[in-house]
Length: 460
Ligand SMILES: [Zn+2]
Image (cartoon, rainbow, N blue to C red):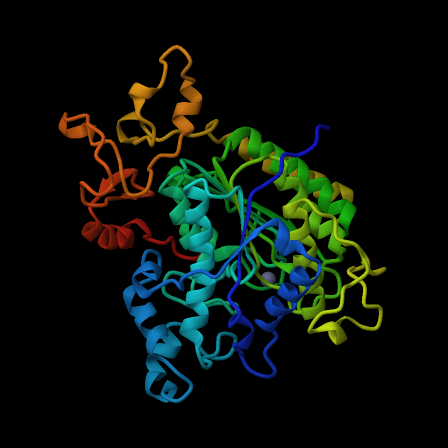
């Protein structure tokens, strides 16, 4: 195999993220992201990427997916006034798993801000891969918190990508089903969601093999249900061929990879048996396809292992295999007794037999074969970021054209009114493409249509 091209990598990190606390007994600890960052810095990975602090997502941005009412609630509720929101707490599922803590809304803003800005930089071609370990909160619903997630940074990031890219592939290797993302895009072929997860008496309870999408989205949701104890070899034996096939059929123009680390061996809430390298193999494999990629965090409840895995995966992304000898860092004591960069599998039983995995894989292939090859946006609804006069008609590749970024920085060819001229972004009002309707809307309409677009399918 030829050497992989060097990637331009953007990494999003906000030094405040580690200060947010879900509560002393809560398994979700944002501090793990700070621990990971300590490793990233001390391994010298910062030399190989650009590090950014994203502008936190604001309320308006969040309501591109979520309801105004829900976001308004999140922005107002505090541990001090939570008693006044009894009704809302029940309605928005805020309480035990998803507690109200100090700075909750800021935390949501910086998680979502990193994913949205990562997507925006990919859109503008400013980097090849963007990383946001504070993102990946895949359970959040349109009007409901769920599974430690409040604002779905992934859906918001994908919406941003859909402004430019015709097809986005979402891959989820968290041990839990990526239900919030699947639900948001259940009825469209512009996003294919592909989740590998523990299924059977396990949170959130969705993600059956036969849940494949509805309407235009039929067969564009892929679910690979797994049993306890899956190891590196078994995981690889399904992940690689499924992703290969998805790439072949769907031909995504951009990828979002959720790297939930609760699928690692020894996770406090998980029951898989993946090593750090087995987990990172997914990142390595996806990277090989050379597509604009947004790499996100997610679950992960044994903090030292989450930090290890995501630091190692940051190395994979920038193309540096970081060694097992851990450099001294602010959280060194967490990594004892071995102080090594490794997460090893245990001898737990693998309940996924080869026959079982093979059977599921074949069914997934069967479903994929029913999808349309690289579904296109209808011609009359396309906008391109290239000046067509600049392109030699003889050298134009129609497939490439179709896959061109579909909308540049809030600017498009206004051919519909017959002028056919290229207006600069300052000359006309910015317009935003309604991603799932493939139509161009004025900004005022966008908020409303966004609400209509996400007529989220009721949970099955
Ligand atoms: Zn999870």
